[in-house]
Length: 296
Image 1 (cartoon, one colour):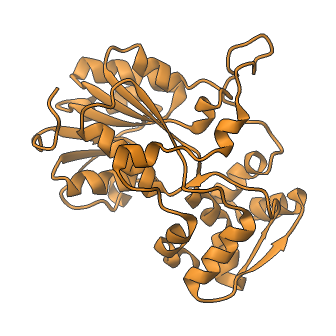
Image 2 (cartoon, one colour):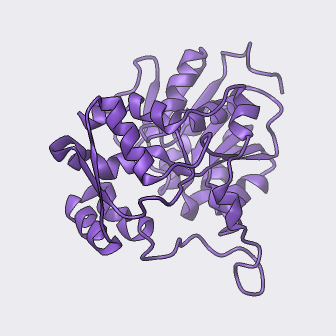
Image 3 (tube, one colour):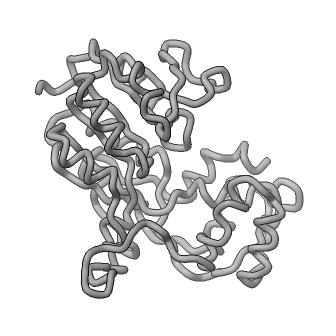
């Protein structure tokens, strides 16, 4: 297949187009002059660029996606595991030839397998897996209300390092795999340039704001109370992010269910962002500057 630096006539379907990463994928493809079709459950509220063809569909209801796949050559696939095989089958039947899957670094670490990855690999289509570590944006959704109201963050794990990545870097790798040859059969594990602690994240947000943001270390139990009271994303992810429940992604193969896990994979800096995009990944300070509006 020809490299798409010239082929702006193709149509690319972006699923999860209004999500944290999906919006960046859409913007980058539009900037590259590619015809973009964006799938969302609520087109009226999508708020995407005017040149994007926005269509309604839900990955958990595969038949609702069938029309969106017509005329599409390549697809960015948000990972919805329960319907993966049906979606990939429909894509192949519609003539899609290349799929880039948004997966997770926990697959690299052997903590679980991803049915979406497996379905795409077995489909005969060209495939690339994009496996980010934690999103820098996840913490903003948890901390933004208290930063806006009180200029304070209340959270545990003050000095435990986290491996986080800017969502724009995830999108940059995904778009490179969509547009250019040489990425078929590869799985990219994506991290920022360095591990960062909660205390360092709070300091970076304060520096971006030009104001002091206090950090108050609290117990996991207190943090869970605060996150549940907040509702939304914070309430939904509180138990998982604070370690009260294990990730339910299906164990890797092995006699004990986790024989192949490699926790060190989640605590090292991977070179994949720079190798694919030609630029170093953005650090947390840059992410904080990019998200000032979330905290003001």
